[in-house]
Image 1 (cartoon, rainbow, N blue to C red):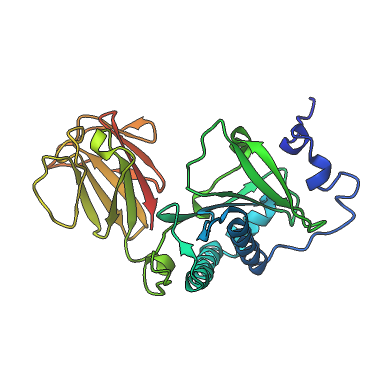
Image 2 (image 1 turned 90 degrees about the horizontal axis):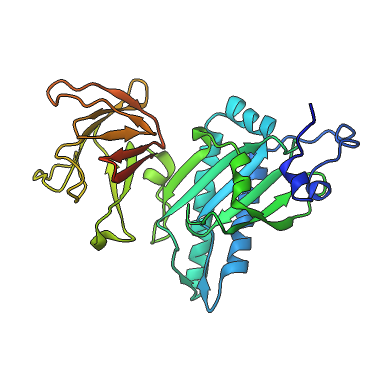
Length: 316
């Protein structure tokens, strides 16, 4: 069977970024350390400030896609479980420190997004010790026809190279829930040691939805799940309790969902009372409100209510 060329070969940059077959075994790569990853992301943040800022306004990336060799990635997950989260938190803390310095110097520091997003991923074409980076101003904002600006640093040379790739190339990257982190942007630039940014214990999850009505065009409705069980309801809902996630549209039934966080296994579960609920492209059976049937609700799920209103679930 003919071996398929790698994405780097198809792009004509195999010799630039990856070790050739002749010398791949001649040199043993040192394992990536947490400090390597931390310093690398900080360097990319500083690069974005230098490249994107203008007229006294500080502009910077809000989404950071950091890619590793498969074995390096697996080592972090297996032997250093939870370390990615700590690195992300310390990284955001440093971001705020640097942005505070710009603001103190009279620069305008206004975010282009309300959150920080980190995706730590693996790719089969990366060699041990390789680390790559893709940055975005607004998470998820790139259109398919646009190219992404990518910086890749092979451990063999330590020399950064930058190039454009099609968004289609991103399909080859593997994403894992363990490597996805989403943190709110704090306008006061004060890192909250006891809040949700560090501990993730302030709320169970965050829900985000975009409504079809014209008055909500371009706006998102967000809800933080603080209670162990909540009700998702539509515009006819009259209750104002903290466990009521009211989505102000006629396309959502009142009530439509019950969502429960089970502390014993750390998982979310969903029960549907609405006319139609689709969870990750699978129909959810409709339950009797007095006798709910529960299905597991994975983190980063996409829920579609009555074929119109989409709701995304993100872990705190």
